[in-house]
Image 1 (cartoon, rainbow, N blue to C red):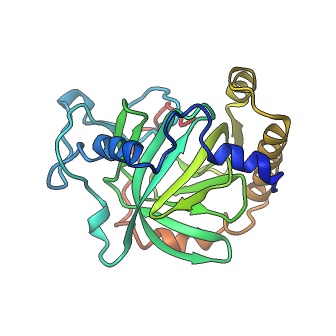
Image 2: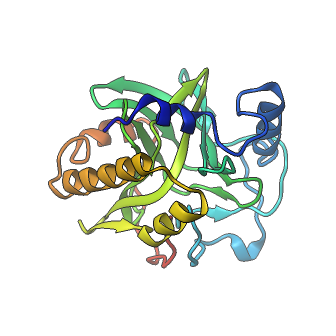
Length: 262
C-alpha cells in the first residue's frame, strides 16, 4: 500500500534529526559506532554471556549473543565472496537510531531485493546494545511496501519476522527505513502472531503518527498476517533459495528462549 507522496517524503527526511542521515557528520558518527565491535572475526564476550540470552528485549533476535566489549573490525560478511556489502539502518519516527547492521546484497527477484546476514553478523540498537546473530538470516526488501521481512535459518524458533516500517529507500549502499513498531511473525511450528500493538498505540501519541501513516501500517500488518498464514510466496519456500547462500550446516535446536524481538 502506498500513501500520499508528501507523507512518505516526511518520513524519509527522518523527523527529529538536526542533521539528516547520509550527511558527512551523521554518516561518520554511525560508522564509528558499527566499526568498533569485532576483531579478526572473533566475538569477545564475557563468560556469563556466552549462551543464548533469555530475556525480553525490544528488537532482539533472541538467539543472539550480547557483546560487552568493543574492538576493531567486523565478522560474518566476508564469508561470502563477491557480494556487495551494504548497510541497513532503521530509525524510530522521531529520528532516533534504532537497529542497524551490515549485510550482503544477494540479488533481486519479483518480490524485491534480498540481503544476507551470515551467522556471526553484528547488529546494534542505537548507540547502546550490541548483539551477534547466531543463525544466518536473509532480509527481503520489497518495492513500495510498508514492511521488511527477516527469514531465519534453523534452529531459530522464529521462522519469519516481519517489521512494519516506512517504505525502505536506498541511499547509495545504505538502506533506510523508519520502524513503526508492529511485527508479524511465524514460529517454527507454524503459529502466526501480530506483536507490539500496545507499543504502536503508545507511539501514535508519543510521536504523533499522522493518520495516513497509521492506516498504512495497519493495512501492511493485516496483509502480511493473511499472506503468511496462507503460506503464500515469498513466505512459503522462495526465501530458502536465498537463505542457502549464507547458511552453513543446520544445527540442533537449543533450549527454547523466552525472549522476543519487538
